[in-house]
Image (cartoon, rainbow, N blue to C red):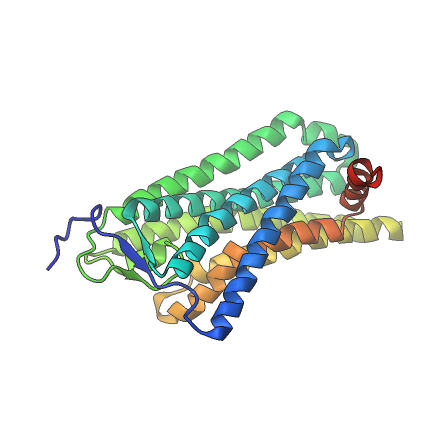
Length: 312
């Protein structure tokens, strides 16, 4: 038996998402296109929000933080996956594995609370428009953003440290395309019951609490929208909120599916596909959802293009 306490000297093997077939090569190319599109789309959102004074509001500041989170999230997973697939090495060091777990949980947890902050922003804007500047001040917006990053960082640090503290004395093949705590814990040759319970508690705190706040905010918003006399105001409120709810549904639904299901219902192959949604596909959908259905963002894009390109 290998040294059970040696978690620093031997690399893990990521089995990946794709095999060496023509269909999987096509799918790999599609993932790379989605990755590049995600980087460009989110970067464009950040630039537009930064340069257009009309978008200097709490709503768009939070949206810029969401775009930054998505850029970092997809960059945590796809480049390493692509490098392993193209070189055929498929290995990742324990340090690299720990870094992926930490960054993924930090960014994922931060995004959970950012989405909750965005739902509060929409609640204040629709239900208390006259008090918006007071209830959604710049200071509160910064505090919510910093709190989101801090809570995500604490969760990532604790789970990454605990995961790598286990002895891995048998197979080091991770049947996944990146280091995710549940997949890595399956390989530990020690009793992980306490850690899995701890991880479940973290999921409740990081997933269900923000989701409860989001559902409460949108329940109040729905009640307020239904009381509106103006059909145009109702349409505008529904358009803004439906975009946010689409993002929430995709992100939270897939995360809860992976992290909060009983062991008896888990399938490695299915888990890999679902994980691809919140690590690869959701980051590219966010800027599309918020830009295509948002007149202010489309207007900012048109003004930016006219300023930098139309003059030539």
